Length: 76
Image 1 (spheres, rainbow, N blue to C red):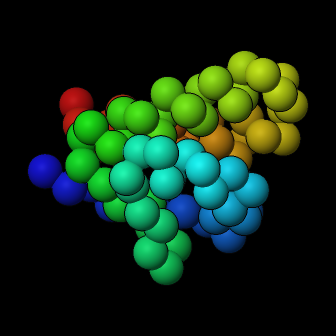
Image 2: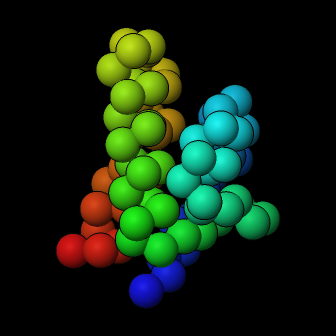
């Protein structure tokens, strides 16, 4: 199953700071959507959580938190 996670402009800009995350997972950003299967988005989620943990920035959490929640909802 393929999921499409919509991204706001700020979320898209934040994700573009770390293109290695999508490259590593095999997920893609097309227009303003993060697209991938369960395995790919699981890797994206893991990498986003690691990025949040290492940075500790509240503004980063405000942008990435909703993406992580949407990935969880897409496959639950």
